[in-house]
Image (cartoon, rainbow, N blue to C red; front, top):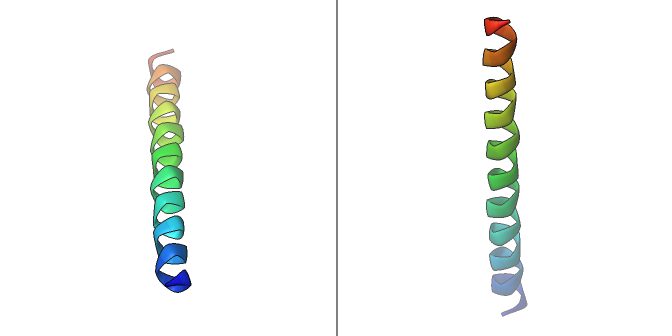
Length: 38
């Protein structure tokens, strides 16, 4: 059972990380657009 719990914990961590990466990526894109406009 420990293995299953570990997989779930890793899965949740990956979901959190992907959320953070998406945020950073979107912010970077917005900054990129701003730079192009200026």
